[in-house]
Image (cartoon, rainbow, N blue to C red; front, side):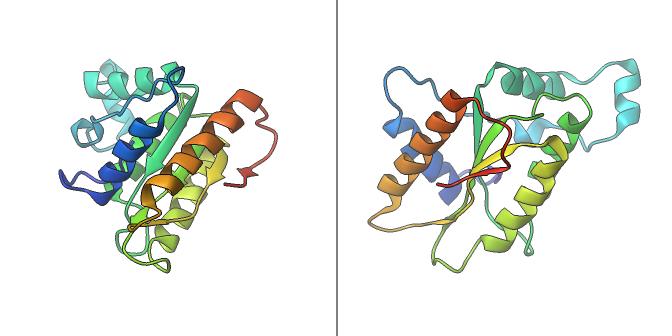
Length: 168
């Protein structure tokens, strides 16, 4: 999942690199409905969750693991991404999932506060975090994206959700 709604997002480029690096026995599905989710409001669910929310929940239910590439906005995670996570805190589709997090950045010192905010938010669902370092756009970009995918695959296969963080 891309935490940015921008069409030409560097984080979407990172996810494209992940898709290209996926082994033949691994299906990578990009969720593109982040911008379709309404603002989180539990009152909306009184009459049933909107289809966009149900699509998001089904995508998470079907996944063995999740990879989030997200920019840093205002030293935090993007509001649309936080909103998406809020929609599944109570319903549980993200609960105890293995989740890789990263950010495509122009320089190594960028993106860290946003990733920390994302890590903090994911503690609400007791996710096992894989990675957590930004990936600098440059000659090692595709290789590092592939390494993160491989770490995510290994952590998901391990099925050990007793720890909070898996090194990248």
